[in-house]
Length: 208
Length: 229
Length: 187
Image 1 (cartoon, rainbow over the protein chains, first blue to last red):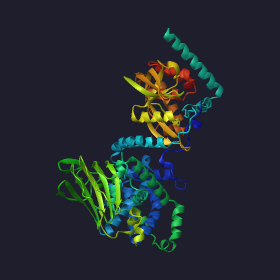
Image 2 (image 1 turned 45 degrees about the horizontal axis):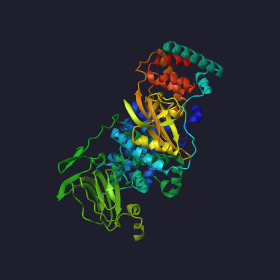
Image 3 (image 1 turned 45 degrees about the vertical axis):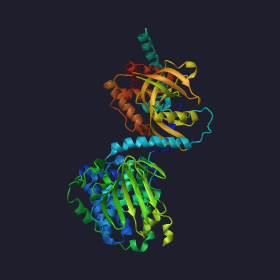
Image 4 (image 1 turned 60 degrees about the horizontal axis):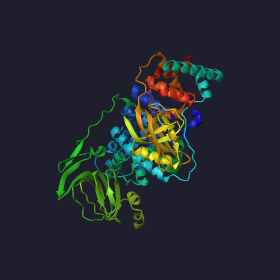
């Protein structure tokens, strides 16, 4: 039997970790944003502001090539962070992704405005800050994935002829159980033996 | 099964916020119908966001634009923070301008969220075709909701620019095959087609008939385009 | 309720209803099984012999595929969830050497409300999950408040021979299972 640790593949299957570096303290940013949402914490907001504002200023300046417009993007983005903090959901993605979305949306609407289109602020409909039709998307996603799976299968090499079963057990080793319960391995072994003995005699009685 | 998806470059520009509202909305609607593309969009957004706010990226960025960035006026951040936090209210969920459904020839269709605040013009009809302009004021780019009634078709046509057809409901077919809701069909001037529908369908279309179009989109949509200039 | 012709996956693993496990699939006949399972009604994980009708009358775990991925070495990984236990009625083999089975759904434990013992087992199980990224990833929505769920997951995790664990396939074995876990984990 394989142990839990060696048993499951260790690679990450979610998109979350892809490309993530340790340079940004994501959990700290999340905590600040939560404090802003829950407690309207101005200190936490100041911390978030000091992290993002100078960076947003630089990004916006390079895109818009105007100090006044870059300042407007900083002001609008950070103002949205303050007024929409309750919409931030840590489980849906990183704080950087959330603030980026706001910044990109603010910039998009601003550009539409200065290009002489309308002041219609469409960005939040195109790139929503909250997912609205999640249930609909989920059923759809299952359907798509099942189709995609067939594609995956057809591309796999079919040359593995030997009867080998590759699978993973979700079973602890006796050692792991001992570590978890903070007991000597010998104690675990004897407990298992005793418990099995009791179980069998109990079942034996029932069968009679 | 959805077979036609936006190209990667288009998804990237979408995430960067560099596309016109018409095409960005088309990709957003496609993402709502195609879990695979939505996942790609989410991944890309996460990566772009992460990189944008990294210190070392910012430094490189500052170096590259050395002369200009160093001269940006320092903003009065303290004052800005005071202004922003002066009011404790959360923003209320805004309401949509358009109703959730739109009717063509007696059939109700759900309007995708991306279109719920766009101004829609009056529906014009020619035979089995009904068209409502989406008024985005994007110059030579024209955006519409196009309904083709059962048994209808569009005469063979070509475009000088590009043509995006996103099938929202129903099905249609052309020489290339059958299309289903969610299919994102981007054609440039080299293509010709003549879509026909048996059961009727509703499409979101974005067309650019101009001789010249902006460099950015030109490069994305028509690789030959960059040689024209 | 009875189902006909479900693919069988012979695998020495103990899986109770709501249990999840991750499988690596690469043999052609089992790729075919996955493809059939996606189109139809899942498949059955069966730890007994499939040869010579020996397995008839035994219990298997009827699973549905809930997720998939490709492993780093390019193999297909699938996550499956046990929908219910089933009695194996017949076993046949097709041209691709894939076994199929007619089955009937087998009732398992009735719902039990959480008590002092199961609450302690739940706390201990929660700790195992917290210490183990893989388990946490596999179960995005653990049900630590359900006595049945907690006891079932503990049984799957315990380092005990399969033949012993199979005793808990029995419909009225919940109390035995609870006492068994209590003896090992809480005494």
